[in-house]
Length: 255
Length: 274
Ligand SMILES: Nc1ncnc2c1ncn2[C@@H]1O[C@H](COP(=O)(O)OP(=O)(O)OP(=O)(O)O)[C@@H](O)[C@H]1O
Ligand SMILES: [Mg+2]
Image (tube, rainbow over all chains, first blue to last red; front, side):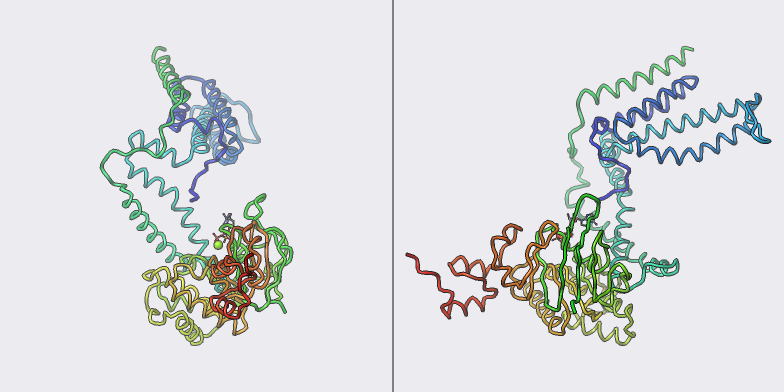
């Protein structure tokens, strides 16, 4: 079943790293640049993220996301550069508007942080199967029921779109116009809502029956479908990340 | 005139994974079975005939109209398709409304549509269920309702995608009778089906699909007379034909009656072994 996800199945080393390490990486990518002063740590982290994305062969998939957020970030740079409350030192003027150093630096910091978070989260989202992510969250102590709800949410939208498509096919197969002007489309769309909701209710019930039949809410200890991802990498990476974060905090406190 | 003409038809869902490659054929009014392994592309093929999918290249002409030049809804007057899965087709809360939906859409008046729907329900033996909710019925009944809702449209071409799904013997006999009746009215009946015995007893012409191509095309008797090629596409002749051949007789009998007649007449006597 197709799920609502950005996961790219490229089978690289990055894909084999378990989701716990990637979650920790997101935390580090946010924490380390925030704790350490200056632009350098943030830039270094960003470079590292881009390197990882490139190794995972998913760098191309990040670009549209980056492009989209650049639109918003550009407006932040514009506004802060012009109107930041600490603005003192005029850097340059465009037409009648003056851009100030402080505002530009401030908004530059924001942009860097956003890019960092975006890239770090992309590593997780683009190279981890959603079901694997949920499984490892459950392994870390998330309730299996909540895990199930999460994975259902990821599935329900594509499922509804699919139902919508099949029902539309059934209707136009029997002579109902569904292509054409907006009015025609609206007329075709309204009668769809009933059966789509009906169908998803029916399938939800069926699925919960199917889950119960397979002892979903049994109280005994359960075995996970996949063995925990072992290997040295999956012990070393979290360790290194934790140490790096600890080091950054200690350094900051010592200052 | 041929009811359907297919010229150099090619189709794939995603580039590089060809599902149908270079198919050219015609359909006249002979009832025709389409057989082939799971995933051979049969459902895809009929969706192309119905206009639900558009060819990647090549053309499909329905009663002389290119499917590229008409909306699916417009084609609905010419071709009816009973979906493989009735749940993909049924969306009304009342059986009668479901069956009247098609006829009303293609220009039958409410009275005509009601009459067609009731006649079609009668034909599939579910006239007494007309006021029920289709979701409350069994799979076999829903399949029959999906058949009735297409039959009620009186299209010149009717396509069934696995009509015998979930049917018991009585249900299969009923569907067989419906197909014969429609063929007798001069309609083209195209049917995708995995039940070889059913094919042998019901259809004049048979197409074998394998790996995106039409491997065999001819009168059903000829197709079943070529067990070698059938085997190549992982199919077997009907049981009665296999039995006939296994006792050493040559040729293809298609029904139990033919088998008995052949044996009585002595034409099908096994060659005397030395
Ligand atoms: N919507 C789709 N998108 C992508 N691939 C599809 C889609 N529908 C079918 N396919 C693929 O196309 C191929 C042919 O499928 P199709 O449903 O036409 O086979 P079929 O002959 O009807 O099989 P069956 O006997 O199981 O009904 C299969 O490999 C299938 O996985
Ligand atoms: Mg099929």
